[in-house]
Image (cartoon, rainbow, N blue to C red; front, side, top):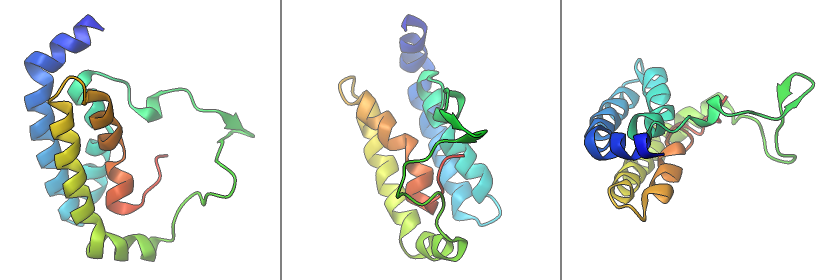
Length: 129
């Protein structure tokens, strides 16, 4: 915990800002969208050295990650593309600003990380794999 706090205070806050800007710019280009999404998925690790959700243990059912019943595993691709162009990039931009500002405050850090963990979902409706 002490190492993560020192990392955040000395390196994480400014490296996270650069990482966020680069990831957002990659996501605005169609070719860079997969790389931008990966960068957003690793943003909490860059900010605070916190393991990403995909690195944490998942509940497995028949060799596949367990899903919540009634929630679709993935939205159709064409719906995700349409959402990204019409609304997703704007919603993600606002969420990035709010999440990063919250991360700059000690009390808002957990909420900021929670918001930043959901950037790929907000931007492209892509569920974490």
